[in-house]
Image (tube, rainbow, N blue to C red):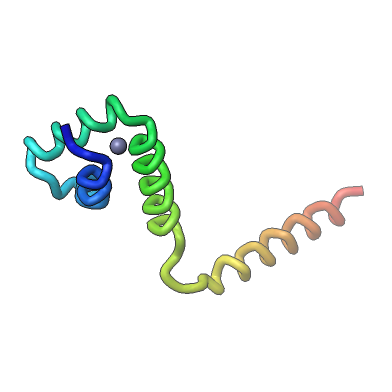
Length: 81
Ligand SMILES: [Zn+2]
């Protein structure tokens, strides 16, 4: 069984799907028995997902779109009695 240190060293490759079949089994095996590393992997996965979800640059169109939607909503509301 891997030590926690060996497990952590493989974590990012594991999440990226870069490990060989055998290594992946070792990691999964360790995770089955080690809640600490499970938590660690979960956090890493969360961080990766968050980073991936972030836009690479600010999106000015989004602000504009939000303003236009708000304006449209105001307009449609004022048309009704
Ligand atoms: Zn561990």
